[in-house]
Length: 147
Image (cartoon, rainbow, N blue to C red; front, side, top):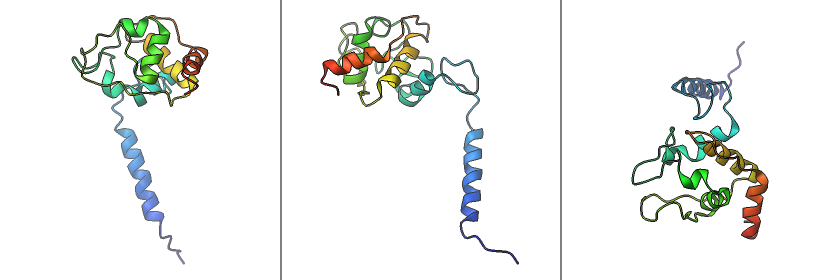
């Protein structure tokens, strides 16, 4: 005697859908990763938060979003970069009016996440700048009343 399970068909369809979507990954790894199974956490955060505007290769969109490769605002003063990424304060090294896009504010990310993300940006795309630490993020956050 068989037992009817009302949601078994939906569960099966869901599993098939998830597997099909996983197969559509295109075989590309996250930017800056070596192609290993799990990219570094900073690369994952870049894909989740930055890739739509700054692109997989960090070249941005001309006239809309700035490139990240070799840009003074990326490889220069880390505190200015943090103020830009966290609060939208345009660094002096980025000409006003050169880009139509708006930098979203990422202050909601944890100190560790911002440090990983921005260290990834500062050490990839041809950049070789010093890493950003969670303590640096906390310092910038504290200067703004902890927000």
